[in-house]
Length: 124
Figure 1: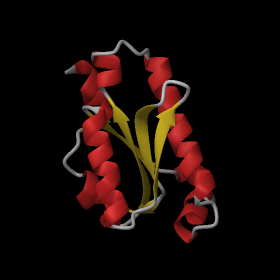
Figure 2: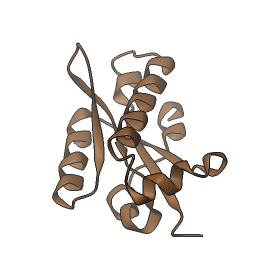
Figure 3: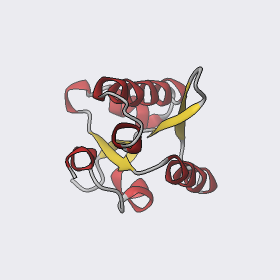
Figure 4: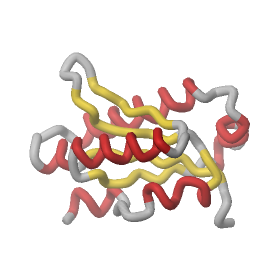
């Protein structure tokens, strides 16, 4: 089903590759962003559908190579009224991750389709 509801999580791979963050710290960033956006948009119709079928939630974690690219994606989403949360880790004040609220895949794929799955980011 191409128009299934999906949540995209965009995570910076340079935090691991260049800045030495642990895998656990990166997982925490993705969890923070995902939880935050689900809370912010908890009354949204798509979010409610997504959360009403917990055993079938679909998340896609994508590799974002740098802070600059992450900020550009956030700006593009904002310009196109795509609800999301840019997670900024405190107290360091570092943008680490961005989670898009659950949407039908066809609506958001055009904004994130060029990025690789995160699993490939660590091994390449």
